Length: 193
Image (cartoon, rainbow, N blue to C red; front, side):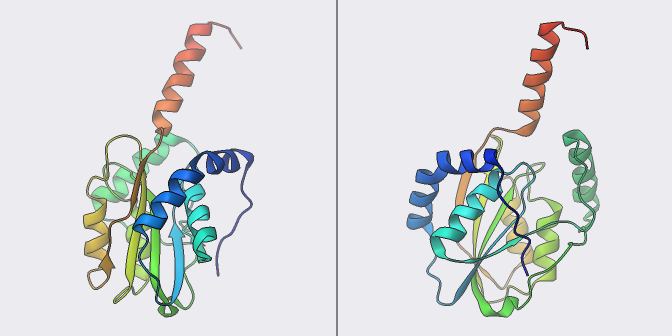
């Protein structure tokens, strides 16, 4: 049912650093679960995955990692270009798998990073494929400094019969910023390969 992978050393380290913040945030903002709880997320760099793991462990919830049937490119800039094209055309990429028995969940913690000032196209796919009518959706969102953009409107419009509650929003270093810093640093070194 779920795509569970072993965490990397980087993810464990980030998780350890984020643990106090995430635990405090989920205790304050968590919606009461009257039934089974699902933590569903999409993550490219691992930040959202770490938060999802902490939430799932704290709530003893089931987990589901969203993955597109055709993975996004490894190259960050190619992924940005593809995601912009998908967003602009309204394309919802097919998912590699879906949640079996979604009807048994009453609360869905929905995690994703902000891409181009909105939710990634994969989130629209997830919301379109799964019937979330009558469920409580608790978003947890990571972003690189520009806020949530239109992501909450996307969630509300793709799950209009669900109850959307206030979630966790965390600013994390943006991958583009990291790539640019490393490139600048390498340029300054002036060491030829």
